[in-house]
Amino acid sequence: MADKILEAVKLSKAYRVDARRITVLDNISLTVKKGDFLVIEGKSGSGKSTLLSLLSGLDKPDSGRVILHGTDITGLGEDQLAPFRNRTIGYVFQSFHLIPSLTALENIMFPAELNRDPDALSKAAELLRRVDLHQRDDNFPHQLSGGEKQRVALCRALVNSPQIVFADEPTGNLDSTNGEIILQLLLKLRSELRTTLVMATHSREISSMADRIVQLVDGRIVS
Ligand SMILES: Nc1ncnc2c1ncn2[C@@H]1O[C@H](COP(=O)(O)OP(=O)(O)OP(=O)(O)O)[C@@H](O)[C@H]1O
Ligand SMILES: [Mg+2]
Image (cartoon, rainbow, N blue to C red):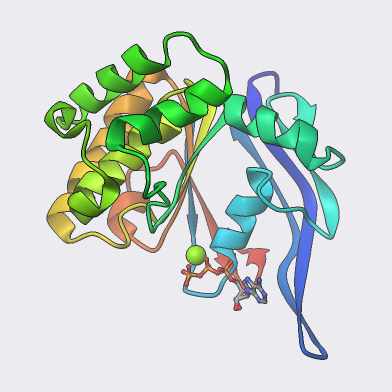
C-alpha cells in the first residue's frame, strides 16, 4: 500500500505488576492509510491508551515494530525520537496536559518553537482564532474551562502541521456539548489540513464517523 502512513507489525506489550505479568497487547498488526480516520474501540482496560502510546512512539513495545511516516521508530533512541515525534505527530490527551506556567498562546507555540519555526507566533495565533479563543491568548490553563483547555490542546497538536494526529478519548473529560464541539473541530481541521486521525474512544457516536474501526478485546483485535 503506497499511501500508508502508519504500520504496526505484531506489537506486544506486557506490564509487570509485583510478580505478575499482565499482557496488555498481544500480537497487534494494523495499517493506517494517509488521510484516514481510524477509531480504536474497546472497553476500559482493553489496551487502547497503551496501543496509542506505542503507535505514536511515546512508549516502546516488548516486541514488534512501528513504522511511522516511512521511519521504523522501534529502534530509535529518545534523542532521535523526540524531534521526530514533534515534527510528525500531534497528540491530544484525555486530560489536556497543558503546561500550567505557559499561557494558551505559549502552550500552542511551544512545539513550533522546539522545531525552530520562525512563524510559531503567527501560526499559534491563527489556530487560536480558528477555535474561537483568540481573546483568551494570554490566559493560563487554570483560567480556562475544560472545553477551552481541550481546544488549546487541539491547537497545540496541530501547530506543526503533523502528518498524523493521535487522540486518546479527547472528549472523555468534557460534557456532551463541549465534547461535540471538540469532535467537530477535530473533524473540520482534519479535512482542511488533510491529516490522518487515530482516536481511541468508547463512543459509538464517534465510531460511526470513522473510516475504519479497530476493536480491542483483551489486547487483541477482534474486528
Ligand atoms: N504502567 C502500567 N503498569 C501496569 N499496568 C498498566 C500500566 N498501564 C496500563 N496498565 C494496564 O494495562 C491495561 C490496559 O490499559 P490501557 O490504559 O491501555 O486501557 P484503556 O483501554 O485505555 O482503558 P480506558 O478506557 O480506561 O482508558 C489495564 O489493565 C491497565 O491496568
Ligand atoms: Mg485509556
